[in-house]
Length: 101
Image 1 (cartoon, rainbow, N blue to C red):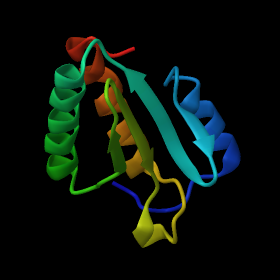
Image 2 (cartoon, rainbow, N blue to C red; image 1 turned 180 degrees about the vertical axis):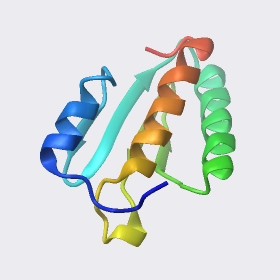
Image 3 (cartoon, rainbow, N blue to C red; image 1 turned 30 degrees about the vertical axis):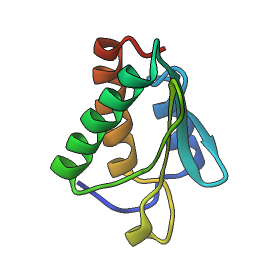
Image 4 (cartoon, rainbow, N blue to C red; image 1 turned 90 degrees about the vertical axis):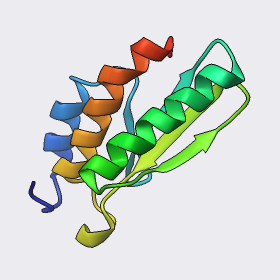
């Protein structure tokens, strides 16, 4: 996958396909609320597996019943790239199975 920085228009266009995600301070961000701490922990573990598969890692924060992600591509100077959107899409697809909203 390309690690070239995306333009603001490309970021905005791609965010339209990722409800709940935003572009904030040069990173893609999203927070999920879950039914319990156990459910939130399970989501963190699942996201960690995806990050290992992609070899691309976010800042991943576990709260009592929340999970927050913030991601950009360090190898592209901290810009948002295709890698960040691939991770966001994968998280979007797996989060509902954990009851995340």
